[in-house]
Image 1 (tube, rainbow, N blue to C red):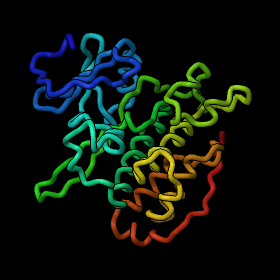
Image 2: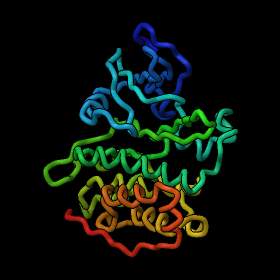
Image 3: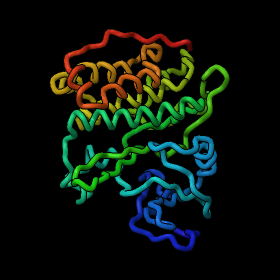
Length: 280
């Protein structure tokens, strides 16, 4: 990678997308900070989005521009949620010793972190448009007492867009994103259902299932192994009707309450019957 600033210490290189090898990320340190340098042909828009998003503990942060790219902070290991859920026994030796599968307490905490990141960008009227496991960075943080937790950060805002005054995205970006993670209304060209931030909620539901089961679609497994409220919210997020998907603020409220051991035990046998209505 050309144009890296003086003092950048490279640790490893990642090809972000096998279908777009022009996007390269170098993981390393700069001025004592864990950073990543990203270079590619279409990153000007991503820089603009990151500047608007600003600082959030669960979103990577823009640091400075470089030739054909930028430096971002908040990247430590360079592993993604996809690495943990699908590649932990193969490609990444470090992950072979990871505490997998995730405990329910860890699942709730990870889901809550993702929800908080989405809440932040949705409050700024931004749709991510490509929420998926490969765009969620996961760092294992080890405490002094030997305990550890997983810190998640949302990344890759190349397809992100700001909604109009009605909360709608542009038609030209309707199909932006990755197959399997796209919401049904994105495929609805004839009915012209507006694209809103509810497409992110749909992908978020997919991520919830993946975190809970390490699979892309396993409703029965979620029902058997986890408190009912968790899978209930996850599958509401996956509703085909965008009006039935909850706003991210409500999801944050639920998982924020669950994100303690006592509340998790209290909610173990609770099943929500709430249905959300959108003003769309």
